[in-house]
Length: 153
Image (cartoon, rainbow, N blue to C red; front, side, top):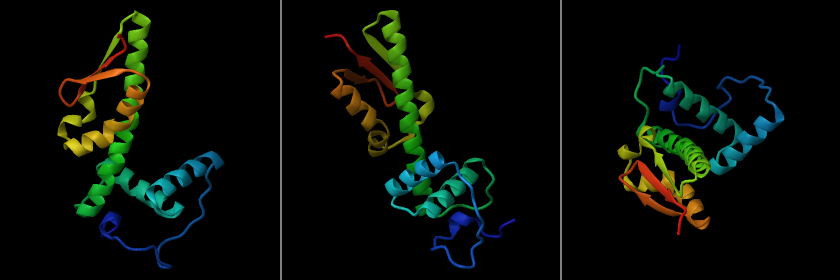
């Protein structure tokens, strides 16, 4: 067991750090490399960050992460939430279209949007909102976690 959690030590990897060979399917490596580029990290740093975050999310921690690390993990969580929101919007659009409706009601209460600042909310929902508006939909937010997607004119 580590005496100091890995996220509390912000430093460059060194020769003293443990090394091992890792086999990855080529497509997974490409996905992680893409994520590393987007995060402006090396492949190794991306893998380490994801492992640290996963370890923290499972609740297997015994120390408080640094504020910097908490901000990084929260930003990654918002990215995952944005992907889930897009999936939910697409699902509700499909349901509305199949029912012959001209509006989809998207309930996002379980996404934690009500606990976010306005800037965090925009960061999390902005891309899908811009995508919908570019496609000609009208959007109406009823609070931070209820979105109406209107496609009638």
